Length: 587
Ligand code: CA
Ligand code: CA
Image (cartoon, protein in one colour):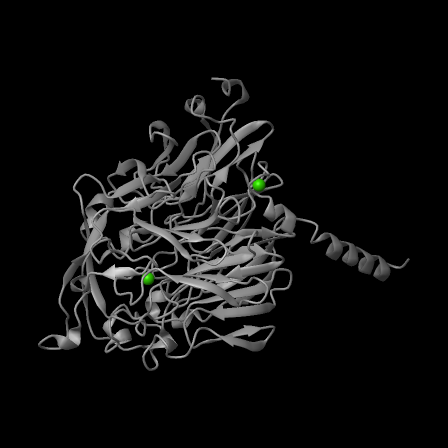
């Protein structure tokens, strides 16, 4: 055999083995396989529940640091990542579109990838990234210039790199990608710039686009390079041409339910914020000003991108209540298949998993002012006096009536993921009790410029706390316990079969709570604010827990009166890994 044939043979071997890495089956079984963490959400249902019970209420006091890893550089802010663990390697993303591979036993860096970001990127709400995806021999993540990158998981070499959208028009990307049946599925960010929300599915191996699904009525989807179907019906719920720059950014990514074979993505606020420009003249008592599918959850067929169902949490949205928050697939105590989601607008919704139909909705924060409640279809009963006023009705046409609305535009809950416990049947929701003065102003669309038509000042609703971690029974809506925190909560939550609920605070505490009582059982000061997402896994017979610490994200950028509660916090970028040593697991 000559050298050429040998090289070809080696190449063939390499390409055959390249998809022997992480498989669809491994992603499917991620929750049950406790030796690794392969998906955002610790399972594509996003329950963030671990069946591990080595670490429990009795012995969590013995949890000790194993190692810490600094992200280095001068870019120490807004570390929102959820680590992945596979085959002895931990993968984390960092602020400013960085990705690190770390030896999970020693905490030593194996390789680092730094995306070279162009001048002029337009991330609205800090330079964050919320995590990677792994499949085959690749690790994937999105970058602030609205690209998706596939890297070889062993070397960090670029395998492919694709543009999601034009960063100069305000698009960016921050969510963890989702992988289903060999497709890598992403949304987009940029809802404050008059972009159009979209979900895209690519062949994970090649990066080739398979389908696209814009989420604003009137836009065309594609399938294998051809137009497929229109989203909704043109001008059914949008006046004139407003749908062309209608927002609905799908910026938090999605979940996947294998039992109904459904992707669920949320869509952000309709653009601009000034709702009078989107539904002026539309009567309140019909749906013609609803602005579908902004501020909605959308069930999508993963094979072709067709919409199966939608549920709009805030029709005629006018407070920046993005509808993007994660939708968690779970089975309730009666064995019924459900989705649950805690919206920016302050309501916690339970939907039927088969068709997205509304089952129940309850407030999960106090003091909701913009709606009196929900009707039996889940549609809000608006307090119309609590909609910011129409500037065109003001004396000089420049500023509408200022109102105080609660929750604030940052939401009763923002991006930070809640967790479901299979142990208790409850959800653990990181929420915030705050409101805002908000008013509307005239605005016209300009590419790459903020497209709000609104001004606002955010305010705490209570002196002694903004943050509130709540245990919610999804069958009744009852709040079983609450942990109040001075600063707004901005980090993810995790539950375990050991009866523990983990989350972190902007003050830097990483805390384990009793899942039934809310008692604080353990905490550790991580040195900077926690806005990241915890994970746990098992290695050599011991249970490990990791969390990233590094203050930042949207809160310090949009502070208002809330700034007082956070302006003393130090930035950072440190990944902490904790271990329950075998000899201390007994008590
Ligand atoms: Ca796993
Ligand atoms: Ca928004």
